[in-house]
Length: 205
Length: 222
Image (cartoon, rainbow over all chains, first blue to last red; front, side, top):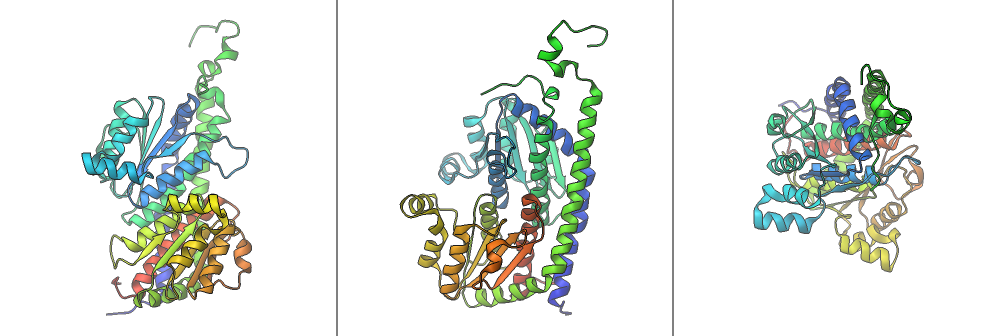
């Protein structure tokens, strides 16, 4: 067995991020279309409902705080809610209806047709994320999914309007690409806001 | 809309009805370019972090592995977006997809405790108090702050150091006040002024730390 020196291991670990990082640029048109549709929803008074499991749940929380409390001074705060944050709601629904229903239940509880549902799953195989997006789609929400690998079952669902796949099988790297992706989604939604003529009539909630 | 002139005033009221397709295409193209630029930015920032902090990362992972091998535990903390990173740190160490599950707890998870301490004492003590109650000399404290100036993170690092814990912090810009802390064992500074790019590179840093720690513990094969 050959032993890899620690420094070489560090270089290898960083190198593994390069290709997937670059490939996000190939999705720029897809990202732009998603931002446009999201901006239209916010402009109509919609809110963002985000969810995911485990590490992706922390991303859902990050997305919500990003929109609610922008790091860039002067950008408008937009309504967002991470429904994976509430341990009481999650464990309550999971215990009585099964874990697959934890997000779908909360989407039905909170969603209005003008809203956006954002589901995050690094391998696209999370059944509760899929169920959440399906419930959202049935209610008329815009549905966006962030996933990785081959996109899993999420990639085959007709309930998803915008599917963004990080081109990597390593869930850690997929997450890193997702962080960049939702930062970009947030920032570019605001670019559309600066061109309100493109978004349709505004609805003040 | 083709062929018909809008009634007077309509265009001002509903400009989107009359904005040309070309205007939308221009913004979409601009937004698309911006995505490609940001993707390139983070790729080059990660490369810079690897060059700048590679040796330190390897050393830090060795030190973490030594603590874990002796039964040490990891406590992570941060505010806002960094609190979600702190949660991910705890998640990735305690419930990894592969390798050995290691004891890790995020100090932002207990809302009752956070609101009680903030309401009754101050927000500055929310992490330090938890470390005082739960941390021991064999443990590890890992704080995240993009600015490097979060008072509750600084205070927690001080408390951890006082208890003999291994102290690690991640910061952006030039490291802020964290860079002035003598008590800190390892500081990883992401040399950027964009909060977004800093957070993205920090995600890579703690993922790589996890991977190297697992290797150091001999639980991941080459």
